[in-house]
Image (cartoon, rainbow, N blue to C red; front, side, top):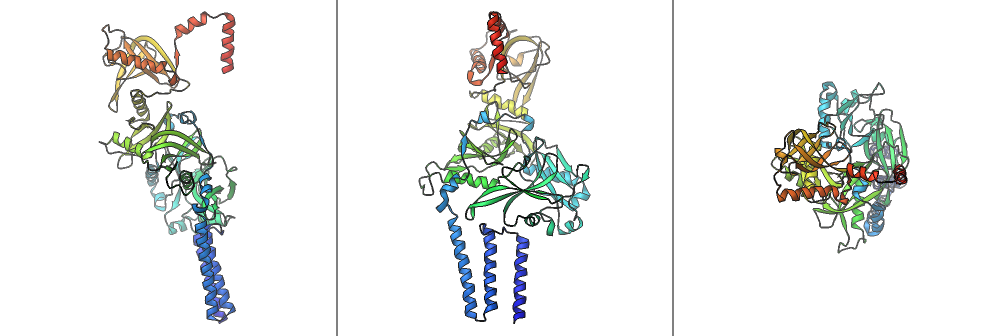
Length: 591
């Protein structure tokens, strides 16, 4: 009998160990998966102990029932005790202090070439195509999962490892897969299959598709992280291009719920070296520490429990909009999402950006369109083409809070781009290039009567000259005129057809008077135009249009410095030597 008991006990212990080997739960009672694994283990141990020390069936059965009952009671108490019924105030404040700032002052305007135009779906297609170019490699390996875009040496990329296709492929590639794929988030033509690092072949040994001791999660657990909560396995590169796995560690703040990120485990994908870091001490190249699911839940709790759990009137409640995306601002990575009043599906009361490392949060108060409404507006602009809009990215365009999204065809290829005003999503423009889209968008905003802030480095000029070259170009149905004055090839002037009725009949050799804005970035945007070679009286409509456009420069709200060289020279000559010296001193101090 003892031999039979011993065999049964051994089998149970082996099966229990096998379950752990394949499921790898967190060995902590403060983690639900850990409790569910440890609890039944205690019950089995109690049942086996009772079986060993007594032959009485009723005694053994009562011990087993008591253990099961105790386990279920604790499980029920823990589940209820983790809810908002007891922790609504902690759940409301878990996101931390949300600072309010101005969007146009806090979010910098980025260069057109740095606007992300590739999403994960397109990155996956481009990567598969790149891998397919190497038939021998593609038959052995496949593209792993792309996580959020990341910054590598100041540029945005999607990065994914090469994974094993099956157990048998892993058997034949035990030393590891042959590299990783990088897809630029700003240039769909920049797709790289990286197979070497520091002039040595890359061998990614520790992967989610690897087996036994090479399996990524099993390897990390066995290297000192058995009782630590692990989530969000992200494949990231340091600034030198060396591949790592970055895994978030976390602890629950209310029994088994409301997890909080405590740091990261950084695992070298080739050597397997693992090292834990706190949130504060994590390497600078790690872009994301706070999991998106954690942040989204905490923002939802912030909006839901503003007045506790018994707020049946929904007073001051906010809800998170459907889409959350990652954006970069001055080198830092953020989660971006809109916040709307409960029951308002298409409008927002503001937008929140959460730092993906520190969880510092900023609210931008503005009434505007949700991401979904913005996508529908962009798709409506090209409804005859049937393009689908990607999740919009918030950008700053000349001081205007703007949604930017790409428009893709049924094959997932980028065909056009769209920009629309967050605060008024009826103002929307599309184009086949980002520069073209931006011009059309600024033109649409100007003609809507809205104020455009051209920034601190914008200067307004009025001058006369002779047209030495002029040409028209049609972009997305709108005509733009490009011209050079007085053979000055350092300046290319740009004017929309809506600026003046005289633009279509202007030719080389005509004398013209233009008012324009120079943003110090190569763009010379004409805001008013008068062909002096025509003596006929202009229409009252054109006269009104010229005055409106001149007001763009003179309006102080647009932050444009009006420059008049002759006037400035006269004012300078009228100053005394002391006044000149004082003015020069003030200018020097400003620098």
